[in-house]
Picture 1 (tube, each protein chain N blue to C red):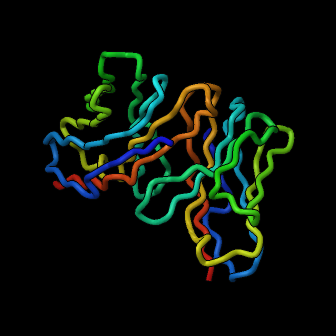
Picture 2 (tube, rainbow over the protein chains, first blue to last red; picture 1 turned 90 degrees about the vertical axis):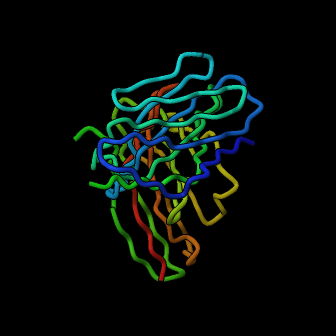
Length: 115
Length: 112
């Protein structure tokens, strides 16, 4: 079974600053994807960024980037130039390819961006 | 709106009653997933469909829960004889095979 752990229940950051959210996972699989999802107070989950395990290059989407350390089974999210709209719950998620593609989520990190 | 839609958004029911939720996926998506999310926790997988076939069910899905996806379009999730422990947000997501999932806004169930 796969597990995903987010060790930071809550974090805060000043607007325009940079913040890093941590995620570790445990699996014996080799073919998988990792995701960060954002869930704003309206509660619709939105995909932030995706990383394929076979890719060594870290994924980047505008102000969002990841630090994927496969050997350490670590997948952190860095948010640069934080904006008030980044305030949300952030979930790290794991997906085994070609096995139904169900997501296993971590417990989430509540991020508050302060003006 | 071409996203995943769920109905109702909120449902309050008395313990012991049956409830049914509906999910309309993105039209071309062949996969549909149900997740349950309790307050302050990450979503947990319940079940998924590929087209009209229900291919996997979590152990979380007790005998009181049943899901259908007739004709491979919308899906319903029914909970019979609701219990207070069923109170949660029920999320639906859809995807194409081997692509990321898109989530609906969820149905918040409160059992009183």
